[in-house]
Amino acid sequence: MEERLRLDKWLWAARFYKTRALAVDEIGKGRVLVNGQPAKPAREVGPGDLVTLRKSDPPTEVQVKGVSRVRGPAPVAAQLYEETEESARKRAQAAEMRRLAPEPSLDYYDGRPTKRDRRILASVRGK
Image (cartoon, rainbow, N blue to C red; front, side):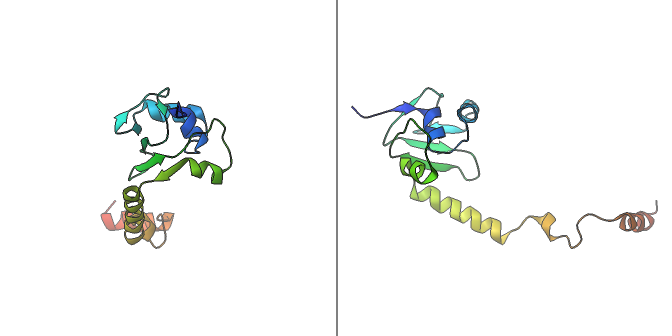
């Protein structure tokens, strides 16, 4: 019989969430799917299941490789899952898009206008 574990415990042990309570909250909000279906925290997952996490954009899809009842170091936790090639490609593409199109607010030379700048703007606008 293959070993299975509650979804919230697996997400915690695989270090996707810092606490089980955070994992339960995210599952309750519908941000975690198992095999394309919304899941409950008590849903059991095992090797071969596809877990989709909508923590960021684009969502991360991982294939469950193993289960662990304890939260270990990150290198050990990384052995519990494998990210799908499509998910890794989408994340790399999104990172490249963010690099090529930086946040517009970061382009302002001096940031927020100073008090003097605001006075000048007000005089130009006729206030």
